[in-house]
Length: 393
View 1 (cartoon, one colour):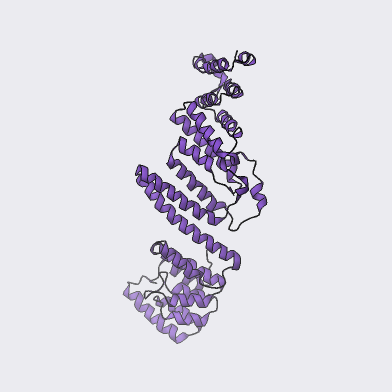
View 2 (cartoon, one colour):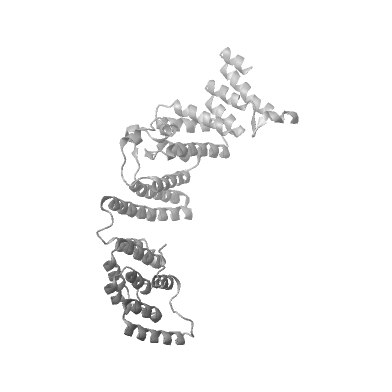
């Protein structure tokens, strides 16, 4: 009947007939259940298609949302987007269609999530950036400012993980200009370019500003916390991008990188928590680079208590790499006399080794015969090196 009405130019009547099918489908007998698949009636797709052909996009969208059919909803979204002149028109038209369709809150959430998922799916692999004005307009209208801020964080995080350090050529930027997401993702394809790692820092900062705006209107503590965390993430990402660019340009051969890492941890106020970890990584990095003088100087200039990992593993690594003179300068600062005795034996200094062994015996007696006073990583690495079986993980 609806097709006949269309043939005789009675679009309004056809639309009402198609919408009336929804009420009838709810009164189907149990024997007709096999005509339904996944909660969508067998003719639901055809109904949405006919409504779209009639130009009743809002009715088609409501029908698709009521049926819970993601494929039908995507057809409606695509119909709106591809008929629009530019990105802002596409977003405004989609928002208008949702309002005219009188969608429920759950329906608006479903449409917004499908728009966002499709944008991420099609745009995520290309690493192309344009102002995603359209996506943010749709999210703001259907979900609110908080959803826009969350979207910005996801884009920033994807960029930080996948973007290259340096700018690539223009071919990649132009290769996906006809993608679905580009119609709703950017207003001018000529402005597109391949993302690089430093872009993520700006994105995190902007997302933090968006959460600050959310906090200003809602006073949600989580929004305020997100703003603070994202600013710190922006600083960290910017520092990482700068270090990666330096590494790509000249490598790590001029020195100072270990101290630079320490300054960065201090700036981010996480050094106390990562003090031991920093020393472990710094020692391994300097040994691997063969910068033993810098390693000995770093250990010797540490605070009065010495490195938190102890001097023993550093001396053991210096001996393993035949840096005997540097090792001699640090042996006197070791606390485990049993290890000191082993160090002196390696150096062929038997008299000093015997004296250290005597002190080691006194140490064992003073602590109840429990053996070496070293614990954890420093004892393991020092002992393994002296046995000739050390392997850095």
